[in-house]
Length: 188
Image (cartoon, rainbow, N blue to C red; front, side, top):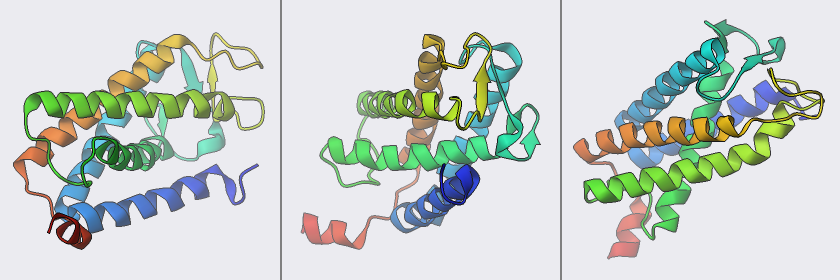
């Protein structure tokens, strides 16, 4: 089990990500990134739970606390705690210091796709654990106790994460982000 519980761990990671994003991006872009992530993630999750169309048929358990609609409040917050570190990682993989807006639309789409792929890879490890017999934060309608995560779930993660990154990176292009002080030392 996770010390302090899954909720506490998620909130601690979320607060760190919000602090880091505010420091790296500035409070305005951090707020935009957070809002885009939470609203988009909640909309996809709500659609997914209600229809089964996004991630496959599943439902959340009472383990994750209060809900908005059919989705625990913790879920869209957890999306930001996963999306933001992955955003920073994508920037580093792309050979850029984080928080620089992509130069063109093609680059924007490529970075959004890379982020979506990394987010989905992260979910390949997380989903079986969090829907497994120990945590049971959600349950797959088609899976048994052995946690049969449907392949549709991973496609849903790609679509959801790609949408979040595309929306944020489009907003990021319109607002000049504040760079880290160390960025100036590296660039010159």
